[in-house]
Image (cartoon, rainbow, N blue to C red):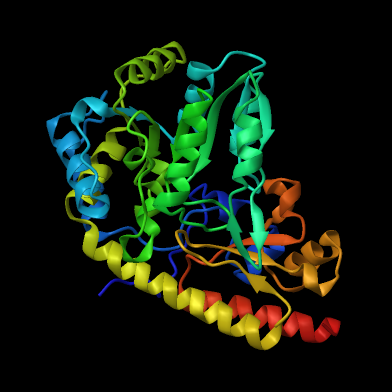
Length: 387
């Protein structure tokens, strides 16, 4: 029904993944598997809404309105069983800027902010660039599946200047969907030590079977950051939602957002979000099925060709976290082999923190024929190199 097998040419559009290829990679038609957007056309309802918005001809200053808030409320109730009120929603042009606002609103220079590496690099960047201290509560890898280190979290939260925890739920890059019990334990620890939690839930629609627990379910006072960007492949439309029921925290967030120049929302982001949240569920369900097929393809290939390689469970994302440490090959050599010999443009694990050494993050949200080509290149390059 939906054309997930069709590759859309994104050259000359400024697309980050496509522009950062070398000229040789462009000539070879290599599709990058790095930056976390998808190589799929958007849901028809989203495309039609954006086209209508373009045809309108006036792209003026835009604010969220009753329709927008109703669409957000509908989606959160439908997909997450979450009752979101219009007054709880603050629009911002991205989740990363929202994290920066949280750092500035709920901490002071020199305060500590807890993160759980290996984790999305902007978490650390937003903390350090705003003069705060990173408190690393590293995840524990148990045979490829990660868990939280609660004893260490207790110690980090007990730091007298620990003020904020930025949670990644589902977690990027390790793919974990935290259980309600795990999240409740985080809340218990952070509440005991007066640590505010901001939960980045940008991948929360990508959980098969609806098993995701919104952090606000265990902590009604939390800051929950969401966006349609990963779900519907619209990050270029620049719109996210900070959902905060606690009035004091909501006001603090909004005051800092305004101090940083925040105002209005993306005209096209408004059109896309309304359409996606009003009628995008059929497309999303088909997408999730397609992604699981891609995952199965890669797992089968790796099991046959590189049985020493371990892939973490892809519970709530389209990003595979691949552990190649058992191969005994240095990171620099692996990264060079993947890009130069196999034509695999992926993210080196070290960018997610020291805990990512020996790993790569691979974006499999691309047409299956292109994914098969990538696997074929990897197999041929490995055979040539004697791996």
